[in-house]
Amino acid sequence: MPATLVAYGRCIALVTMVAAVTLMLLPPASSRAGVVVRIYVDQTALGGDNDGTSWADAYRDLTTALATATNPAEVWVAAGTYTPGANRTDSFQMETGVALYGGFSGVETSLAQRNIAANPTILSGAIADGTVTNNAYHVVDASTVGATAVLDGFTITGGYADGVGNGHWLGGGIRMSSGSPVIRNTTIRGNVATHGGGVYVDDGSPLFDNVTFIGNTADRGGGLYTETGAPWYRTRHSLRMKETWGAASLVGSEALRSSSLRYSVGTPRRTGAGWRSTGNYGSMRVPSFAGATYVGAWS
Image (tube, rainbow, N blue to C red; front, side, top):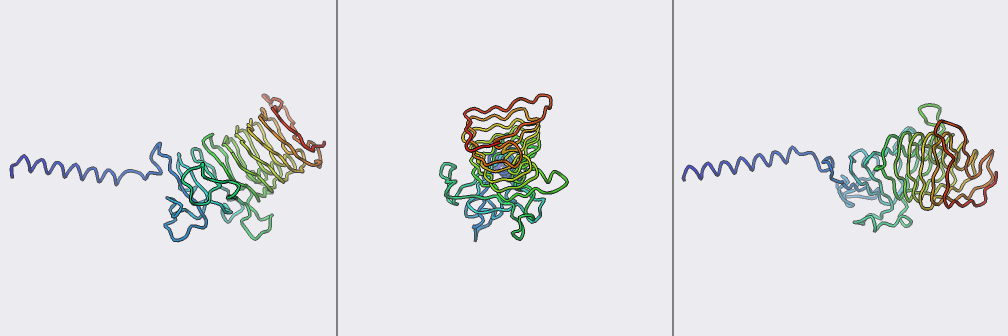
């Protein structure tokens, strides 16, 4: 065989070997920049690999799925009730660049196919023996995340923030400190805290889009308690509860802005059936409501 052909063959073999080694050294798809990885979660998934790569191989535990999610990623969660762990300090941790979507039956191939009402996807703080005082302090923690952190299509319930340290008295449903996530198409129901039974916001600008607060309890701000933040509310936002210091309590907040905010509340135990705003912290502005409706609010 001519020497030139032998040399050419060796060159091709070398290139093939280098290419194979390069592929072996590449990071997994979930960590490659710019690739939006879809991760599947279904607590009823049986018989598959349970590695989150498809509905058939879905993770059965949402916490495990979140631990593998890297920016950017979508986590699709099928109907069911999911808890954040075994300890009261455990929460579902939101991350910048990671979007969580609920409301799936477990066969969908696009977001448009999900039915949130027919497939309730519940994030619950009821981690222990059914005794509410043993529930997780915060069901979801959205602290320090940016606007690409998304929670869409869930019911958040059962948080019980009655602790005395590390902020464990703030935000039974969602606690966010310096967080600006998007919360959309979500119901926040039956959570308890000292401040912010449903949600506590400190120094953040979250967007609440089509979010309903029902039956949350707190000494201050049963549905929402915000300090030095500027939350936005868009579409139909409803606060329905009977709370102390108002359904929403705003302390030193820049603004509470809404395009359609609806209150349906009972008589408060102290002041502010609809909402209560207090404090004067530098840049504080009067809360602003556009198209707001108050139903059955007394003060």
